[in-house]
Image (cartoon, rainbow, N blue to C red; front, side, top):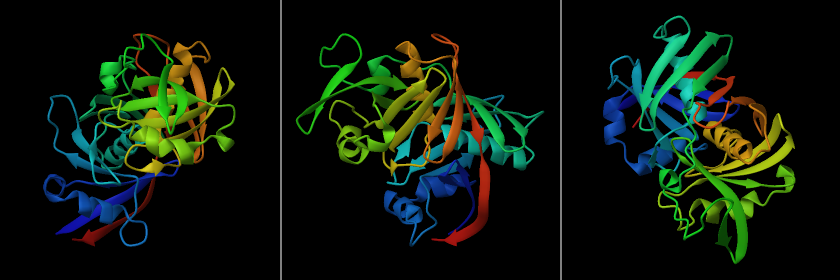
Length: 277
């Protein structure tokens, strides 16, 4: 089977994008892991598979597979890359694209010039949305024990689960040590993305994310959204925040409770190719 693909990235958070419902249905987790291998495959954080629309008024349905081969619900930078891909294919109207995915319907603004904004919906702070067991803790911050150490953080769903920890400096944050055990903490039924957030100012944070099924990435769109949502709920952040990640800056706009959150940043094509399986 031959797969034609487009390699894209948002601030170094990289993807393969292709249109093949057959491939999505037939590839095994081992094959996804092979394709994700940066030495023997194509290399990616996530694979994005575009399928025909499943709802009226949408341009496409897309699915997301992490580098570990497992399917997930949502991907913010991936959504921005899908929107730009559809624009390049002539499938957007007046710079607007409506898409559908396991995490729900996504509206995007694609004016060109490399910037893409997506409506990521309303942040959901209910533990059930992140399939998180509070163990009787009534309200955040929640305390989890990992490697015998208590860790406090906020939990939010952006269509996928996020645990956000506040740190003094992301450069020295214990991401390598705490990221893996927190990602697989037994209190999260479907694992969790772990964000380490440094508040620089009300309109600026620094962030590193240990992504579920991938590890640390150059950027994480839903991670940026989740961090701003938690920081804003805690009264630390303004309604427009610059999020500085290892790969560059994203902008998150969230007016507040009950309102949709918008994520904006660059999306770029790296190259196009094909691979035979």
